Image (cartoon, rainbow, N blue to C red; front, side, top):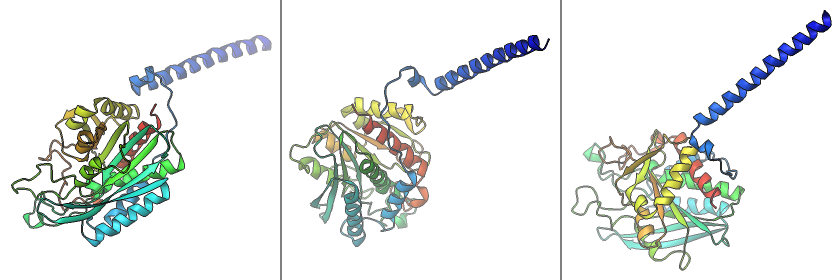
Length: 340
């Protein structure tokens, strides 16, 4: 009796164990399916370094703490020195490209593009960029009294630079096979104030990227493609497939948005097509012929299409969200480390 009972119990346990194991396997497969159709098209992925959102936030705050980085001011100069020194800790080579250009009103602006070079001997290269100056006018502020007040530019400028400084730190710790060039463009946001005759006409904006595109830091510089970051720190930000990016770099745009979807960031990287935007990427595409994508927040409810705090005195550290910085940083890192 004891022997038969032991056999029966073991047999029963075996059946239960098989059912449990089968159930676990089915649940695991279902979970993977829920993650997205990417699971059905397995491709080898290279391990991507971790993106530290706290570090990125710190880099954003460090810039904002200087005050508005308006060209020809001591705050602008001090922040430029900080960016140079920080990038020198991480990059193999750092180049400062001095700029002296005239603004829309004839003001002579003194500034400079800051370029960090990683893996300088690699022939295959990717360009990453953001602008580091901030707007001299809060000309979209709801209070007219603020329309000639310089802005902190926490999101519009500092957020993109902060993400790229954290990426630079990761590149230093985990050297990729691909050559990476990080450029902080200057003199991007010193265009005509709103309601002036040539407001937002284009040619008097993005002066640093126009100068670099005509005279890059390396003669005949080429990169496979470029990624520009602008306003990438707002809470619940949505990034869409902007018109200039689709026109000049449709395959790279799809590559980035597909990667974001695979990583679970589809709520940030919306599969929507939106109107062209005049930004630094326009001149990299048009003059330098490097297919370049702009990752920039789009907001249909703001009235401008941009972040609702765009060009207002409220573009400060209070609107910077670590999760948004992290989503953008992780997507860009994954793209460049999995470059074939």
